Image (cartoon, rainbow, N blue to C red; front, top):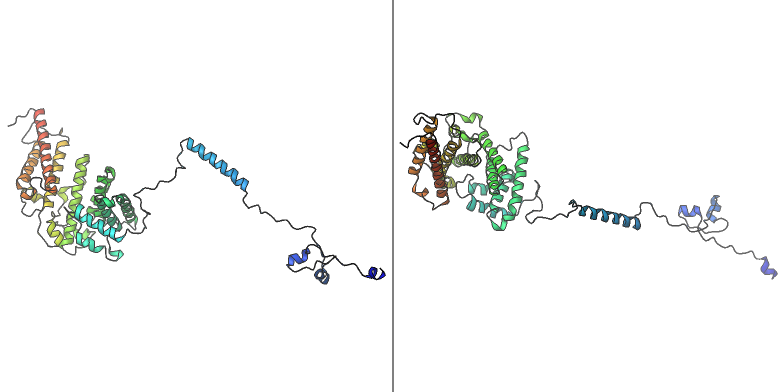
Length: 421
């Protein structure tokens, strides 16, 4: 017992490391009343009385809070739907929508471009062509800066998609892309990027596309834009005696085929303007008396690039049709049709309608009647009857014009008691 009582009591280690060792991330021997490290350094050694509880940060989301917010959102959504508010309606993608319709989207696959372009030149642009088929197709394989403008490429594919059932769903997206590119070119620089023959042709095709979709206001604006572009490019003075090249916007044509394409573009714009004026009653934007450009040559000569002589519109109206092509007959017929409509619906109160010999009304009436008779007589056999769409169109306009002027002549004669003699 005496020997056992003389031994010192064993020290019990502390349950936790001291604050100093814990902060310094060192191993603590947990000696009491102070560890060996604190004793050696002479620092105050303190031990915690309990284990430190984990700290939950204030930014950690709480389940109950999220549940309450979710219930509130569901309640508000249900209330707005009951009121008929449609802002929370899910987006319904259209079947004819492409992945992207912005200006910098990826081009369609090459096979679609080639197929729609071929459809355009075989089914849409087969009569009265104003875009050279082979030259346009070849230009698609040139470097990007030498290709036709993107607006023209897209509107050609959009126009072709309307008559191609497998691609009909692409017509509207391609049309919208064409408009984006056209507007972008118009805003670029000082406007010089927009004043080209290709952009004029784009406006023509855009007007055709809009008419087929019954967007008549858009179509009239596209036609007006094509008229002004053709005048800025001096397409109405290609064959005039005046030296128009001094103020010309376009460079000299490289060959006859390029000159012929400019002529055809001008006369297509002319026909579109007359059709728009005739169907709406609005004044025409082009004055035929200020056009010195010759009528187009035959379609075969244009496609083959073989130079062919042509004639002017006044010569054809006067009865000289020896050099007039089918496209030229269509232009002359469109002009006569518009003149007869204008004569029918204009106000005749200012003229003395009782004076059959000297009245401006009756003078113009006789001139138009003579021009129509000349057109019927000189019409070639290939354009008589209705065996082709072009012949049907020409004969329909001539007969309608004849009915119009004889109707207004009969009305005025009966109104002013003028004898048939």
